[in-house]
Image (cartoon, rainbow, N blue to C red; front, side):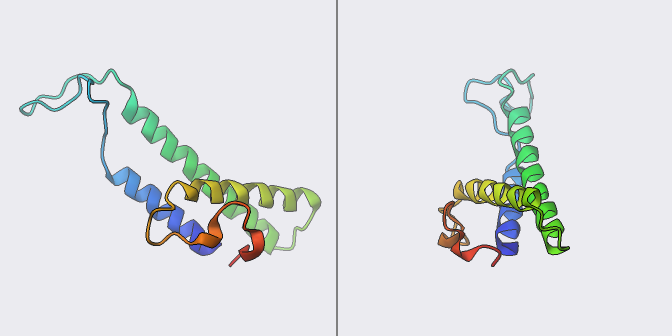
Length: 114
């Protein structure tokens, strides 16, 4: 699953590098070098979305580390399974990307931790 984490982090980095995106009718569009106040709130929402996804990826990595240290309680196992399901679902949004692997699809737990 390390490859899945690297894939997700790379896609989130790609999303951040796209820059600010506004709705077509937003007043913040750059007209002849002048920038207007944004009223669409899309850049803030997009930034918050990326940050939230990064927190899920980080939580999965932490749960994986805890499991690798031998903390195999039912709670730890359940937490790891829940985060694994979440990161698989996050990656599904980029299933069109050439680096996406079919075994990462949610529900295909046969390739877990590969």
